Length: 186
Image (cartoon, rainbow, N blue to C red; front, top):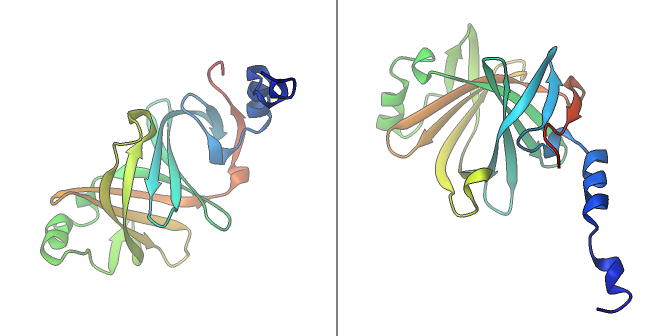
């Protein structure tokens, strides 16, 4: 080992301090704490989406008390955040899964929670739980809907032939989240 090689090695203490100074809503880790809507939420899951063409996004499962939310983080041209909660797909339309199976696509307009939602995009991607390792990607199809204001979102996902999930939420701003702290010793 030469004299200059000493400076190339990463000092664990310096790396730990850098991480603490650069806490960001876009780079949460399991166990982190974040304040949102007068509650402290714990990051209980970290997920990654591969949309193809070397384009990835993240999602964080957040829990506070008995509530669970999902924070979608997309860093394309600018940071885009969306807070979603899982809903039963049949609360949108009791025959929606059958419609998708028969037509390979949901209707262009859906109604949920008294709002009309219009299909903005449909895309295929791959999903993985970061804790489960690099090779455990699962394919799925996503249909994303927005209301007229563009503030509320309704997502329909298809996993395999007959498995469906739905989520409802709204866009958020980075300033909506405060006090990001590592919830564990780094």
